[in-house]
Image (cartoon, rainbow, N blue to C red):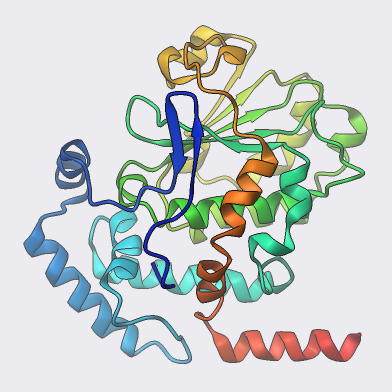
Amino acid sequence: MLSDVEELPSVQLGDYVLRFELEDLTPFGKEVAKNELRETPEIRAAAIEELRTLLKDVEDLVVPLDNDDWMIRFLRPCKFYAKSACELIQRYYQFKVKHFDMYNELMPSKEANIFKQNILAVFPNRDQLGRRVLLLELGKTWKHKEVSLDEVFKGCVLFLEAAMLEPETQVHGAVVIFDMDGLTLQQAWQFTPPFAKRIVDWLQDAVPLRIKGIHIINQPKIFNMVFALFKPILREKLRNRIIFHGTDRESLYKHISKECLPAVYGGTVDAPRVQGEQWYELLLKCDNEYKEINNYGYIKQLEEQRSKKNKKK
């Protein structure tokens, strides 16, 4: 954590407790970290020191050099190769400068609308491989005149920033389900080439989290028009992780176990869905952490962007 919060708030949901898991890795997490990420105490300690040295030489970049846990957030998705982690950190913060309007003072307290719309949710349970599961409903549930895709993007950023805090999620990563049931032509027109490029650039180059799969379900034929915006700019690695299931639940179960899905998708998890306002209440109590997150990066460039924006007002 970058703020003084020792334990983040939680919500009880039947047999599940929804909270941010800040504990050390479980035995399963340690095994995966060692086998897939090369993580051992010796490699971790050496990588942290090497990354700290590399970051000191990056011009104009302000980061918490004395915070080992912060370093590990970026080292794990890079399998503890310090040079790769340093490059990821630079891309992560350069993206924030490039898309200043999306990131300027971004925190839950300023994004109430996306949560009230109840189209983003994180499952209270992990999947069979320990991954977090993020659900986006951009079909009949999405009132596109009330919440823009830019707001959806901000909501996703807030969720993934929270996920980055969890050691277990740093190791196992996350999967995303897009439920496109009921997508209309008017909604499809909301997707633009600039939006598509921002999302793809973010996922491919600027997310310090292992995105292990993107699952498209219940998509109507009109979704082909939307995906056509994304397809040409996808690199092979991400393209291979996007899987189309339609209404074929058995296809989905091959990737996310039936025992890890809610009843609405034919699963057996009995925990009630976390409503958007419950998420908002949870994240709102973490505003100070997001404020701290916003204090780092290419601060000089961000201040220049902020000054330009204020002059236009």
